[in-house]
Amino acid sequence: MLETLAVPFALAFAAALAVWAVRLRVHGLAVALGITAGLIAGQVAIQGWPALPPNGAIDKLWWLALLGGALGLGLPRLADDKQRRAVSVGALALAAVWIGWPRLMIPDVAAWLTGALLVAAGVWALSRVERAGSPGGALLLLVGGAAAAGVAFYGSSYSMAQVNLVLIAALAGAMAGAGAAPAGLGAAGRMAATLPLFGLIAILAFYTRAAPFALLLLLPVFLVEGALASWPPLGRLAGAAGERMRGARLLVVIGLALVPACAAVAVAYWQSGPLYF
Image 1 (cartoon, one colour):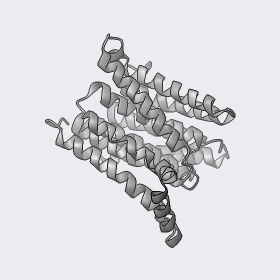
Image 2: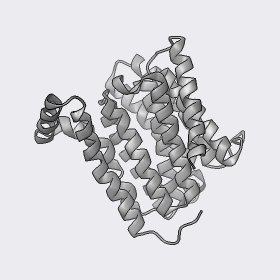
Image 3: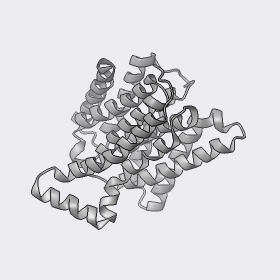
Image 4: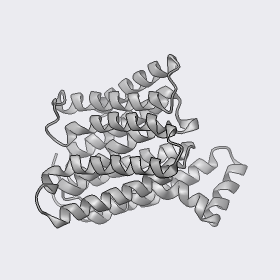
């Protein structure tokens, strides 16, 4: 398992570091390319070379990372918040339809309702993460992805959880290679991480026995940073901690995010059936 995750981490680190070294530091480009390289490496290590054109939902994940990175490069050029929001909604809707098309092409109200709820939740979470240019905003994606891996393990299979962890390893490697943690991921890096993570959660929602409530509990993980700004008691708590000890505010953010993350995994475990490896 560790060897499998080491491959995407190492390649993502190398790719991000190479892009950063040649000073292509535009809106998180190094992170975006690192994530894409890590996802491809992880899929090769687990399943072999991805099919071209993609056959299954898993084959589409690194394409979503590429799409997210490309869109992220263009988002800062849009001065209007409504335009940026429209692009984000369109990207998430496209990802949901592309991943869930085998279910959506059948006149199934439950599938279409699932897709609509996924897009609405994704837009809400992405808008909160966009405002978090700090390390907290980047690390919330790691916490949420790790929780999604736990939900996948109990709601789907070991191999599905492994795919989730590959994305986390690729994101961590890209952040380390580009030195992204102190300044956030950048628009391209954020979108390159968000779209494949959204795709993985969509796979769990459309095709597996993952508990819907467990998937719903993943949403608050991405809202923690925004909650600190919108709820004064939490904001004062984090601010006071940051004044007393360097990095303490970040620990408060991660600690709060771990509450719904652990709850999601606990619910998935509680409602799980037989495990498949």
